[in-house]
Image 1 (tube, rainbow, N blue to C red):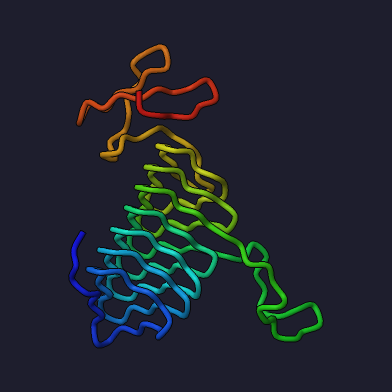
Image 2 (cartoon, rainbow, N blue to C red):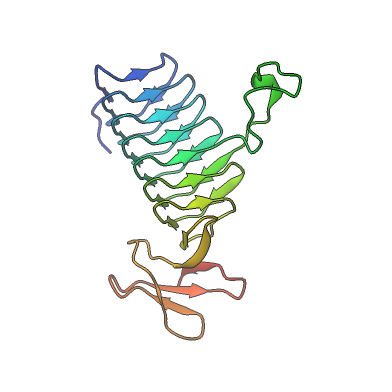
Length: 200
């Protein structure tokens, strides 16, 4: 792990109490809000928004224009494509039924957990209350409204499981009797009767 200090571009804003791990880079016009914790060797590209209290692990890559709102946790090695949006309110309104402006006291914070190694394709949307499994792959433009299993490949609106992927992101091929194999790197997996996928 690098010992270099974090780098913050002059045009970026990082709150005083936000934490940046060694080797992390925060690029042009990015914003990291109060209480956010970002691990080591991460990249926050141009225009990234990281909300209050968001937790991000080590070696996470977040591409241009992604919005990660409060309630989100990203484990190590997660990839967030350009313009991905994390939501945190399943019942959004600007005002209450009486017309008064809604405040933090008027809504319940929703959470999103993205497990180790998962990848989120460009312009995908994650709806609050879900978990993205380890090494899963969310297709570009997908709207994810339910949990994604480990190694799951999801696509569409709403997103549905359309296959399984290797840690190298290539689609796994069925090899009979619950066996799955990656033709790219040769790794082998097992699909259990409940549909969960794990290394063989």
